[in-house]
Length: 87
Image 1 (tube, rainbow, N blue to C red):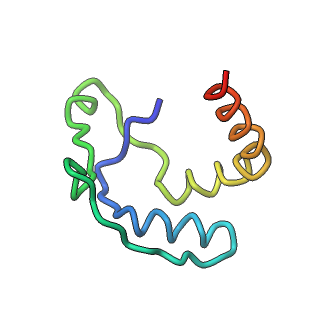
Image 2 (cartoon, rainbow, N blue to C red; image 1 turned 180 degrees about the horizontal axis):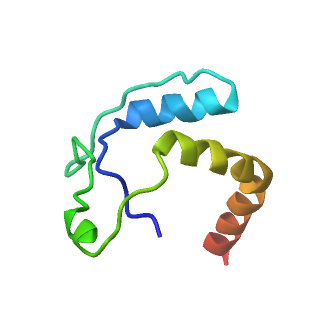
Image 3 (cartoon, rainbow, N blue to C red; image 1 turned 30 degrees about the vertical axis):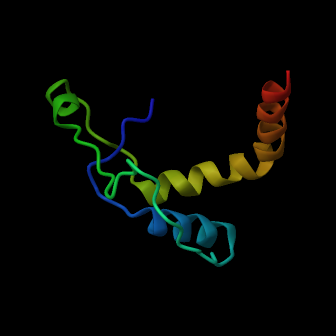
């Protein structure tokens, strides 16, 4: 499960980190926020901590471990999702 990490990170920073991990640079075009879009994303995991949960993997470490999987499986995953929307 992905429960999040209380360390706040901007969407722009996430995109920059993904592109850097892939060996490129992002050309970010800022769009208009749709109504109801959150301005900040930072989960509150305090209740999970009371149950003994504590994040073990930092975002950058997790990204480095998941990128190779997406590079290897991303096209199959995208085609699978597209097929599911057509059926």
